[in-house]
Amino acid sequence: MNLLLKNTIHTILLLSSLLVPDIAMAGGKASLEHFFEQVQTLTARFQQVILDEGMNPIDQSSGMVRLVRPGRFRWDYDAPQEQHIISDGKKVWLYDVELAQVTIRKVDRALGKTPALILAGQGDLNKTFNIKEMGKQGRLQWVLLEPKQQEEFNSIRIGFEGSSLRLLEMVDGLGQITRITLSNSIINRRLNPQLFSFTVPAGADVIDETRAQ
Image (cartoon, rainbow, N blue to C red; front, side, top):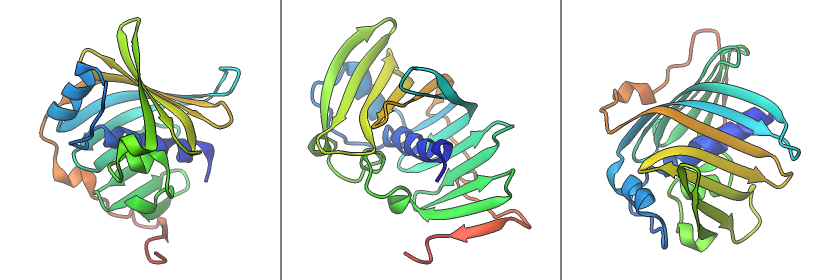
């Protein structure tokens, strides 16, 4: 699995996790609690950059993300890295336009047992992470999640401006940072359910990993 795709799936599952209800965030800021309690849907533009351990950008991309609680998402990458990653809450379709290839996976096996899947609502967040209040830096209020056991990411920072989710930073074991910045966010607008279904385009190659599971 290439770096962009791997980090993309982690990010999508992390973002979708922020729409899962009834997650206890002991010591979390009022803005974080408000987001959990009030947000049912989210539509936003995103800018994604992957930084190496020297803080040098090694990949950049942008696009549109749409989320619906619980568990549905659509992640559309702009050209020239056009990809579409869609979940109906049970399956994930990963469509690489340039390769004309579709990979189908079950949500709970998209990346194995990772923090991203735990954040998506499978398990008690407090049993898996140490959750620390980081206070305010600039305009953002930050919460830090550190896994209690070795996982794909060493830490995850979530930044809010008021009650609005603005920025996520995930640091992996190599010191690389996946940074996602959201803008033009719209919450709780009804989204067409058809956005979260997918029909394989004619002529595309299909890798259906759900059949072997």
